[in-house]
Image 1 (cartoon, helix red, strand yellow):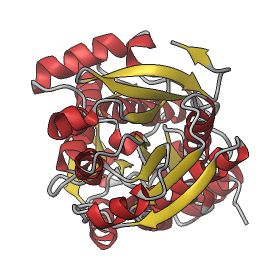
Image 2 (cartoon, one colour):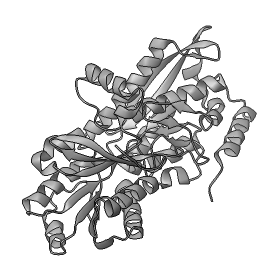
Image 3 (tube, helix red, strand yellow):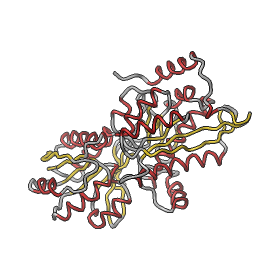
Image 4 (cartoon, helix red, strand yellow):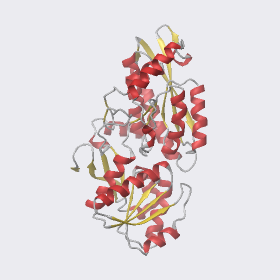
Length: 393
């Protein structure tokens, strides 16, 4: 049974007050006019997904630095924000260890984790300790369906994204026969399951359902098996470290099958590493294209100037997540987790990625999904679906 966030938030707040909880050391006044606010961040900073984890850290850092530059006031005091970043290595067990470390370090809130498979186990620790957690990228439905009033996300979930992708595959690509592979992670499996439901509902036939892992790099055997069934489209639920070798091996087997992934495939790295094999690949990303957002182009320009590389994937969502957290602190007049937590669900913010507001579970309201395709070594937006009525770009 789900727990409504707002009553729980009130219970938590009352409970904390009842126990005589005071302002944590991290938000105590450094002097009478200033407070220090610690923002935790967690994601893979080593391993195959380190390029995406670092991208998340960069987006979080930009938001914190911008907040410090503009002089954010909370409760009449100037706030100084500090970033505490931890490497969860995309490993669920490590994620719980770094989550506890962030709690012990008395962070005021957490941006992360990157993956659903790490965000879900870590969320139990943040909930137990009353620490607000806003994920920029965890899309598994379970993340916000556990009843934890501390869990929010600024990205559409797998149900929303899988529905849009399945509909796109059947109606726009006009795929009649579809093969599906997922990496058995909370993200990959969840997205593939939702894709299958939507594709079938829109008239497509799933002729193969196969599995791999998020550490595999050789897919020749499973692709050879699928080749004999002659699918029109192969959907892979997973991240780009597996998507790159999969599409390269798909083309090496001379298969003309269309290749599609979710947001885990929408990276410059996929194009860079897959080369010509990536041509024609479809992938999605929640929200409308960055170029279509009022602040999107400026954000992308500033990001590239500062970090000397393009945005990989979720940096803008991290930026928005931090600003949602800050807005809640300002509404509450406090950076104390128990005091500003009830305000997060009430925030409405014009972010870099979208106009952000939350439903009762902590999911973003009315999330749109844009499908992109690789053409001449670039991702190009094809169609935005969900949220607002479908719009041809």
